[in-house]
Image (cartoon, rainbow, N blue to C red):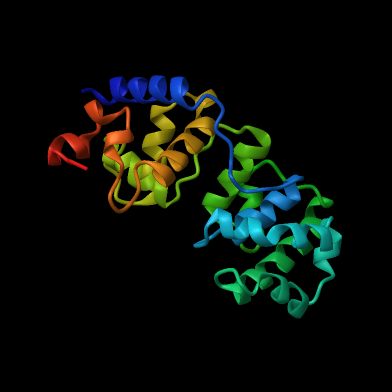
Length: 214
């Protein structure tokens, strides 16, 4: 199957079966989503959601977090992976928001990436979820599912992002990001993928090549 046709088939299936995919991170403002996404690096959304309510209550606005001490932030996130670095990044991010962006989370990915703790993936998540920008964030789930299906042959995050950006129409990219994440999280898992639950078996490159039976 030509890659153009593959993208069409994948888009059609997800549109029929996952009409309105959403991030599973809980948030009530762009600033709080930014906090949650930074905390989610190498940590599950479920675990992050356990701790963000108290973080959001303590730091409702960027200025509140910008003036916090390292010890105060660390205490709130110490049960999340890499709390030392993340505490420093959160405070630095908040200071940057206050000083350079008037406490408003920017929509531009390049500006987002100037903040501590914000890499390309995080910037793309914020831009797509909050501002519906035509970008795709590639995490481990997106990377795995894209390569298994044959949407990309890329061996780096950047290469996979490029293929997905070219393959999905601009207006579909924010949705496609969540389609692939959620599919990878619950169906096309890293170990023992649930191929019997997947409606894309007939076009999945890895399933076809390896004749997976689960």
